[in-house]
Length: 581
Image 1: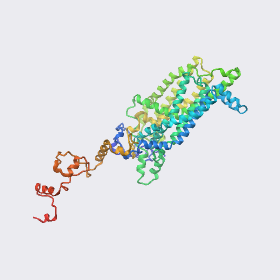
Image 2 (image 1 turned 120 degrees about the vertical axis):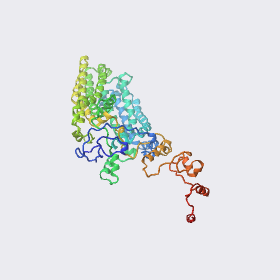
Image 3 (image 1 turned 180 degrees about the vertical axis):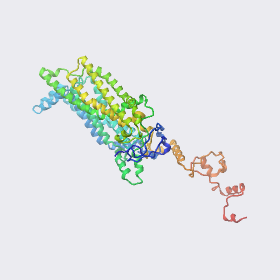
């Protein structure tokens, strides 16, 4: 289904006025089914949502404490995932000292139990320490990770649904924030381990040898898979008890007629970030955003392939190194494992920094290279299908293509420079040649594909920033949970009460009752002031927004006499007075 992300938006008073704007298009609109939109004004930035002014009914959860209770009740599955992850990481650390030797020892232990004990002695482990590490480390690390559930609740509670372009984007953000604190200790541990090995810390990994690098690749891959499993478990429907995007799409298509508009508004909002922009001269913030979306694309295409290749190459290298040492000397156990040469680190670190900067600048260069395609744009609306979008906006397709080409060229240049530097330094081994060939044949095309994918899906984010700066999606909730307290406590906040009064005044029509809040001596026409105002004026003085003057209705006979003395047309108190001349 080819559908544009231009569905009805919040009230027109909250939307930027686009020149040549048209009524919102239906979800099934295709290019050519509605008049094109061209030469649109730059989108107007909306003021950020004030969390203190959110009304009680606009919270999705009663409080952060209630959200934390939901996360804790569902933490049994994450606990099992994290326990299994930490157990695998401990085993990989033990095997990383000599993976091939451990494998051969395990095979030999089937016939001789002493082979396994000899392997532990050779690699520097003891049976008691190894048993303690396998039992204690996963339990302690899992408990530490689960203690961070309060941080997960705090991160999820800050999500603002109305500032997300679609319900899918909002629920993805909830899942990512819920899982991030739980998986962060594992990523941090791996990074500290690599840093400690480079700094020659007294560990069982004496260097970043081929065996250690192969186990490291497996560990990183398992950590990424565990993070994906945590995000799937802590999904928004499970955590916030909200309908899934698929259910909203079904309701928008075939649900009851009175529910279809609300489901459509909640499912997808109109993207106000029109392309091409009026000015393509962007600042450094665009480069940082481009680097962010490029990193996301790498996690989808480049990182999985790189980890698989790393495990394959380094595992085979460890096998070759082991059997080569066995053939050369009988005392191979005492020799140091082959490690990455220091020349490689000395060249790769600065070259990697330059490459990252070039990747960040590449989308900005692509904007300039795609300028000739501006005049070919026939419709600036955002269509969900890429084929429909590029049909009416060739400029966007040119930017994505140029970005992918530049990224591939930058990566290829970096590989060539690295190979030349290692060759001139005399440290380019057979493994290095294998890596250079795999980089050129596999990773460089994937890097180009990742750059193109990133611009196809996130070019508007690179140019304009988050979609929430320019639109508000029609959802019943503005914030997941109160920053402080509960809904009931927020309802008593003076800021919230003032916001309720402001919204009532903004939505009141000409014939609605408006608040009458006047000072006792303000002299409102037709209303007594001071002590003569009676009970009604007393209510006005107290600030009741809906209090009206009683005109002496509860003032007793004295109030009626005062009216008769002050006016010749007093309100009669009985039908007898009406008959009197």
